Figure 1 (spheres, one colour):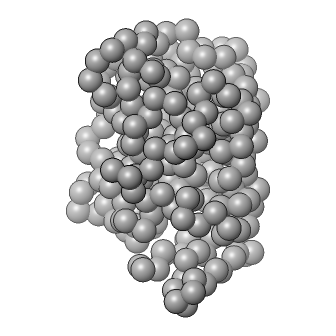
Figure 2: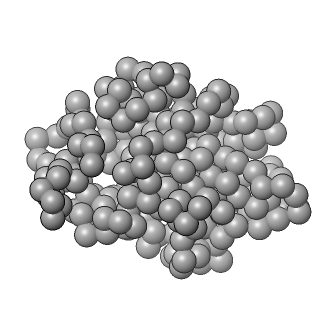
Length: 237
């Protein structure tokens, strides 16, 4: 297994976990998960309707937890952890972790528009997957590679995201303004295989237990109608 690059802006306290083979599986700072919030769904959204599967690319901190959240969402068919916002040539974990490539750790979500809408995915993202008011950080991880972003594929996705952010800010749904960036999707590059389904394969790691498993619990609590107990795993493709 490739060893994850150490975070440049890491707090002094960190956890190192060694696997049975002696490989370094985790070196991330200790911290607590972001709290979930219950917010209104988007007023402007696509209606549920039959049609080809669609894709949403979202960023909101470490992709381990974000991928796991959306793998448990009804109507989601596949979630890929990866990189968006930069060039293909520098879309690898070590380069992206420097915060200098323009990428954000992101997820590409393939979903059935007859079962869930783009706006509902944003509702889940802002409610339980990450805190959209944190600028260039999420929990223990800091840097532009952990920014909150919607990488829109077309003008419809852009319009829904813009309107929803404006709706939430106008309603003061959060104590601070939303800083989520809207960026045109110019390319999505899947992350290395060892990052895919990371939470599912490392449920006892301290970083996962503290930062990411609570997101799954919050999804089930805040969105019981959308929660799927059996995840749509990347590895089941």
